[in-house]
Length: 149
Length: 149
DNA sequence: CTTGACCCTGTAGCGACTACAGGCCCTAGG
DNA sequence: CCTAGGGCCTGTAGTCGCTACAGGGTCAAG
Image 1 (tube, helix red, strand yellow):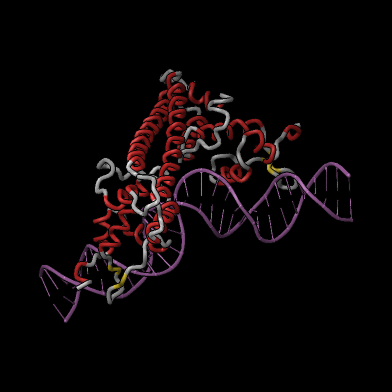
Image 2: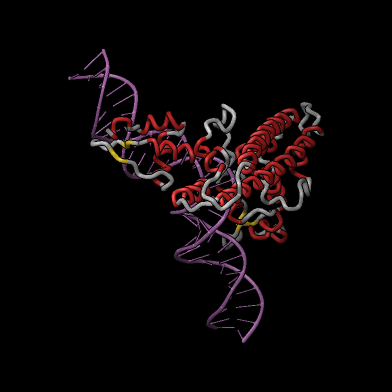
């Protein structure tokens, strides 16, 4: 009766919103457990898998790395986590997001300033190009981590 | 006399702030031109290389992809660019940054709300974990592009 | 009995680097 | 003159989080 309501990987994918390939990838890297298999080798998933996969997905949506998610899952799996631990991880993450937002805002400001100085004409002189070539110190000093992709 | 003020790759790296390996990588993918070589095969760079590399670096700092930078460089190299073209690229980019900032702010709000509901105690019950497991619709409907790394 | 949808494994690709391994070159000190 | 160190060379593999095949097996409907 167990297998009666088991999900195929395709069904799990639809229910969770996670790609089939991604599910298999999660299994390979140990984020998802190896599921039972049907006689013909098909993966069979139960409700627990769906729950866990949704957990992973939401974590990813919130910008946690798979490594951080692994950390959270270890805590959960071991039932040893405390609220304080989880909170700390979350707040660390918030701080990082805050930094990213600040970086991006700085970026936006610089680019808007550049665009504002651009005549927008058809001539091959452009303040933006000049800025890229010539400006010595476009951004703040410590901008080594500014790359946002 | 040319070679007298030529820069080694290490010197170019220091002047530009770009890693040696990255410079070689840029050469391999065609963003930087192949430089002259010394008798023993060392790369020799001139002021134009430094200018161009700085251009690339600033573009990267501003979040342009290498492909976009290639586009800008093509325009510059061909001397066919118009200010309007460049401005358009830049403003497209600003729009994207704006989107990213909005996404991150949404993210931050959600996570702060989660953390606020967390008791911070030592018990193994946690509102954050619960949220990750149970919340059906944490974010807006169309959140497929929310991954920010 | 065939078609098409589904599933399997394994590998390669993306972007933008970074990190070696295993070698050559070049200069300064002993 | 020898050696030690730093710098440079090429080429390959690793990172992260997937995605996209290639080349098969399985299964249900018509």
